[in-house]
Amino acid sequence: MQQSAQVPVAEYRQRIEKLQAAMKELGFGAVVLEPGPAMMYLTGVRWGKSERTFAVVLPAKGEPVWVLPGFEEGRARELIHVGDDIRVWQEDESPYQRIVEGLRDRGVASGRVAIDDNARFFVFNGVRKLAPKLEYKGAAPVLKLGGASGR
Amino acid sequence: MFHLNRRAFLGASTFGLASLAAQESVPDAIKSLHPMTAGVQPIADDERRSRIDKARRLMRQNKLDAVVMEGGSSLFYFTGTRWTGGDRLFVWALPAAGEPAWIVPQPDQARAHDAIHMGSDVRVWKDGGEPYQTLAQFLKERGATSIGIEERARFAVFEGLGAAAPSLTFASADPVTIGCRVIKSAAEIALMQHANDVTIACYKAVLGTLREGMTNADVSANIAAGYRALGYRGDALVIFGKYTAFPHGSIQPQKLREGDVVLIDDGCNVEGYQSDITRTTVFGKPTARQRQVWDLERKAQDAALAAAQVGAACESVDAAARKVIVDAGFGPGYKLPGLPHRTGHGIGLDGHEWTNLVRGNKTPLQPGMCFSDEPTIAIPGEFGIRLEDCMHVTENGARMFTAQSPAIDQPFG
Image (cartoon, rainbow over all chains, first blue to last red; front, top):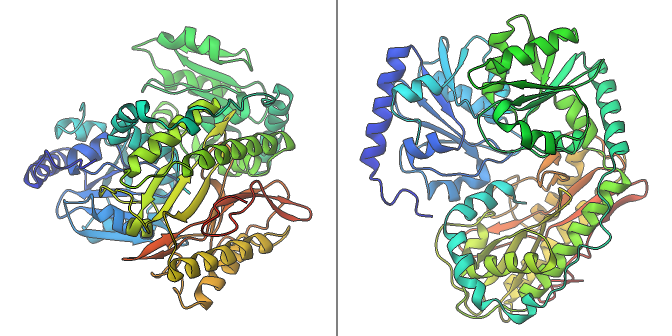
């Protein structure tokens, strides 16, 4: 379960940089991922999907933003080694608000955002309602160009 | 409080190995459990048809012309079809008027034929074909333009359908799917009762076999073995000692020692309906502090149960449990040491489903709603205590599926 033991942090950073280059090439301001193979490949974090949103915003410029449930912060910090901008949401707060704030703080207030194709509709829909002006596209092409799919 | 995702997570890593290694050393008390599979009544097709009728009423009320769902608990709820696996589009679309249709990938046609037993409009798409055009064509035939997407459908489905039919508008299907699922029928409650009974039988056997030096993975493996002996599949999160203050545990290895708090949490399913039970006890003699916090936890659980009356707002049930804990000097709010999460979640075909006992949720309780009641008290550096039983709301208040734990050294009532 020490999932990041075999891959040094520097390598995750290189993978993210490669993805950032792909974002710039394809015109994306950020990639938003739920837990899954892409999050695992890019950050080493493996997390079970539940109804409580746990996501990472990987901006084209700047550090990742982690959004996760407040009471899971302790367990999550055991796993997160790339980036320390961790934004928790409490049980009566909106995780989508945190995601949108993360995007905005990385300069993504307009333009295109890539969404994990396997993200569940409720996560996307929550973000879309708060940031209706962003243009949302599936992340598959940018992940592919960035070498972060097919693992 | 804790379900499938975590189960899969553990299954894929150390737990799977531990499970294999521990099989030979499963205690006799667990191996000798008898199957509890007799007398289970699956949901009848008539009940599923009445769910579809209700869904259509809710669609009209919410101005949705159709709802679209992938494989998952909502699909199973309405159709009895289980479907997993693959990126290829497999969906069921239910229009407010007219027959529903299945969109099925050609390579999966035979499997789909076996899995589908409600409805005969099955539209097969070939590899290299256009599944979303097939779906869009069906929606067009039904005159559907306002489409509800089931909450757990993938973003790819939304994007693919939107690209195939740009004039469609999309909203959440939640008012329809949740509107149906949140109220349980007598048949559903009976299945949940059975799942709860199985879990208690399993936990009783397993907690009787704790030994110094066992790892938490050993105990998880024994729980999985217990479920197998009982005729079901399941396992549990097991946490020892100070790590019980993390509601969902820690990746740190844990070996059982005298005086450790022991927390086990999760459940099994019967015909898809979930149980979710937590017991917290001490291996050895509890300290005065452990006993005091445990007793407070039980009072908080009782307060939520008492508050769960028809017409009460969901948030008032959370407030009742939280008040007990905060009045004793913990918290306030979600602050640690204290109760870091909501008091409970809905439960049914998903271990966690709508609606929640949480601040801000003004939904009034109605007969047939089912919730967990689990106001954890977490004290970082020391331990955490969680008692979790599930309850169903009746006209005369909420009723637990299981006898609550009476004392720290008596996990079962």
